[in-house]
Image 1 (tube, rainbow, N blue to C red):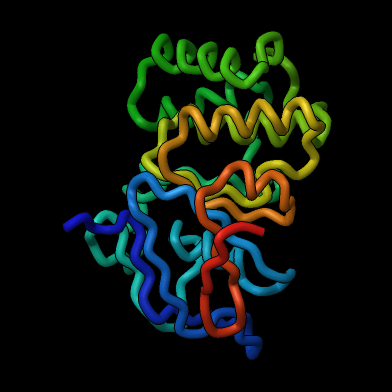
Image 2 (image 1 turned 90 degrees about the vertical axis):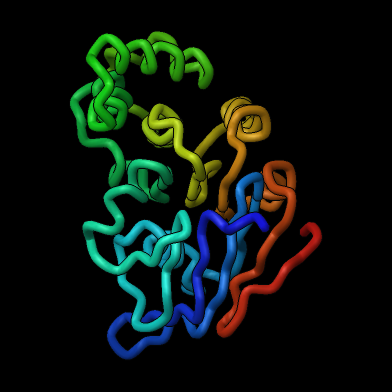
Length: 220
């Protein structure tokens, strides 16, 4: 019987005295392309951070790749195999140039500089970023930063993507390029978005995050 990549059981989370998540359950299997929607403040981003170990749930269990994850050490493997795209690209980009940002992940996975910069070239080619390699990251537009941030995740060849508002700030052509990549190259992902058209095209099923549960929609 196939086991889930991500298995969350009875997850609750509080910011100070504010309850954001309560007894939520979620399973993500290989090949799942899931959209996650819900009102602002419903805990969508919080849920992604809990999966990555960036936030610790108040209660409940996080099991990823068949193992319970509790400590910071437990999540090192997770961050190498699951790629998180932050909603704010400035949280993801910290190197001087685009090519250094994209190469950072592969280098940390043990790739040689030659291998890493080959990945940079291939990634830029796929995402229409050729010519951006030596651009200064902080001088990019918001949409360009978003695409480069996605490239940094993509370059690590993750088993599963967690994408927080991936189409935000992108023009129509760039959104279509990102959509094509996801549908043709990314096998498994959990995607948070307020963009109904994008989430309908990118995902096979949509979950709605509500105060005490996650429910399933066929389509928006």
